[in-house]
Length: 228
Image (tube, rainbow, N blue to C red; front, top):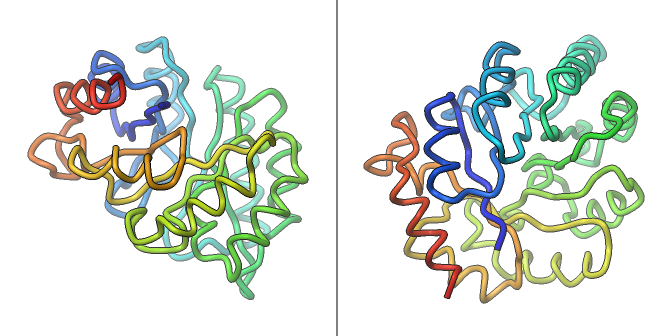
């Protein structure tokens, strides 16, 4: 099982790595669902850990629809993130009709050469998750879809997650289950859906509080859970 942990600071990143995380999703604005972190933070985290750092590229939390100017900003962020040496980016954009914004997506992918690309939970607001996944299969650069199966939590979206795992089997796309995962439910969710990657945030933070640091012991406990 690949365990991806949300990090919002250098301290988070170090604790997650010591706990056994396989990969980081680096963000700011955790209460807003994740926004683009500063370039200084990206550089510091990349230098501080040896595990892959995938960086959120999301300029605001109003929606997943972006103006042309916002897409230009995002493209610039992708370029700098790549130059800093991060492993990947986490992106996602939709049209007002809740279909994938392919023009915006392709603009960012053109700047993402060599980066590991995850399409984030904008996917859950798409009108049709299965159709969206079939479209994303046509983009070899995109290696992951972070999703809760179209529901608020991955637990509620387990049935959709399971079907997405089947849809993407033997392809370049891996389904990452995220949202609402804790030490109490992560293993059962993985068994029920067949996902090979999970994404955890508040569930592995001190006191289960979003604005506290990652709890190294909780990450270790999650790691141990999947070692048996």
